[in-house]
Image 1: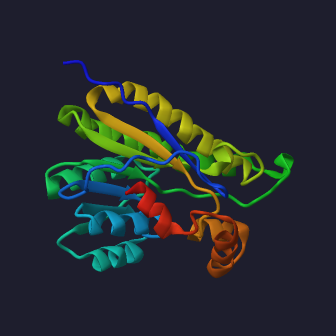
Image 2: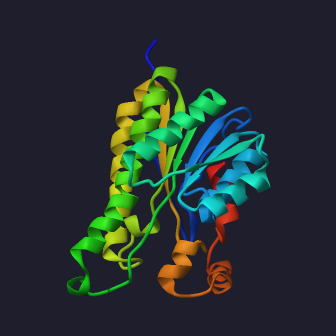
Length: 249
């Protein structure tokens, strides 16, 4: 039987709200989710929301202490922490294999880990090494995450892969040159992979948050978490990481 084509959904979350809302999906009860960058910010909130709705969660991050803290808040019976440097293909492969070895399958892959460089508005002041470093984490990690999730999901003929892009992929001058380029790459890769893997029943989407108060955003902007949250509460419909996690759910 011919499978219905699954087209990519790019959700842009901006100061005016959600341009396109995902439809209510089935429960995460019994699903297994792997989240890179799951120790803080959007990743940590999403891990807790997924677990609350019945999923088993693998928190993959380089931040060991924070990662274990997230798992403790979820409960050891529903989560595990895996150390994962997303620039290292072996470690991403290991995280995926660990999820399958522990829970028997992988239903959801959330490519969320990201970094940024110092904000230098003039392109002539930017360094090639910084540009390559940001793309290596933000774009290459999505490629590797999709690749190794597909290794498990294609034989299963099902799965969901989500990646975090940014509103910087659609609006200029919202972030650094390297970060902006890397998030454009995430959107493009999402569309390309969705066309290929949709025939196997795998849904591939990405989200593009606006100014959500995460450790990364507050560091780049040089303002406190509380100050950014206050700004977002005055101008945004999606105001913090908890609301964004609910959209992912």
